[in-house]
Every structure is written in C-alpha cells, then in structure tokens.
Image 1: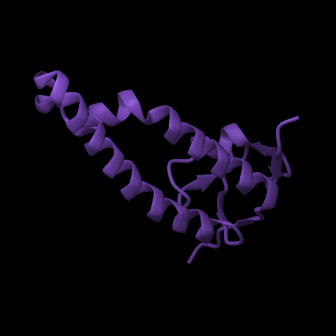
Image 2: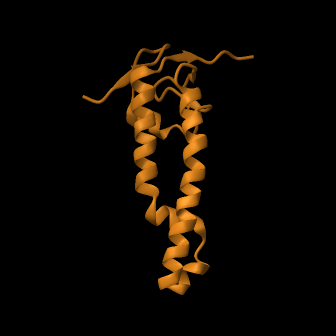
Amino acid sequence: MEPFISCPQCTNPITVKDVMRFSSPWTMKCPYCDVKLKETRVTPFLLLAAACIVPLFIFVTVRIKAYAAAYWPIVDHVPTIIVFLVTLYPIYWLYERVNAIILCKKGRFQVKEKI
C-alpha cells in the first residue's frame, strides 16, 4: 500500500503521486479541495538535500557530456540540459519519489493562512 497523508481540511488522502505533482514545496495544493498547504516538519531537510544534489547532478552531467564528446564530437553542440534529461533524469525521478515518500510518511500538512 502506498503511503499517504490526509488533507487537514477535507481529510482526503494525498498520495505520493500527488506530492510528486507539486511543482515546488511552496506551491502545494490539495488535489481535492484546492486549499493551499504548507509543510514545516520535513521540507527544510528535503530542501537541504536538494541544495546538495543539484550541484552534483550538474557536475556529473558536465562530466558525461565531456566523456561523450570525446567519442562523438557532435555531443559538444548539444545543450547540457538535453544530456541531463537523456542520462540522469531517471535518477532524478527516483530522488523526487523518495522525497515524496518521506514527505508522506513523516510530514504533516497544515492549511496555509492568508496574510
């Protein structure tokens, strides 16, 4: 069974797939009642992990591009983001899935107050 966390307003389950669809930790909305949500228990640690893994992804992508360009010179003219999407996107997807699972298992959503 996939982990889920209940919406604090409508109490419908927000699953890992729903969490993965959020564009960022600051724009979370319940997929059922559209209330804006915030999570303060786990998000700071996940953002710290992202701050460490994003430079690692950039470094590895540049290394892969340089290695591939030694064999296929045309790769030198391909944008780096394309190289990332072709080679490392599955690892990035797994990273996002693990973040969503952690958020569903250990997180706690609250309704975001309007200021």
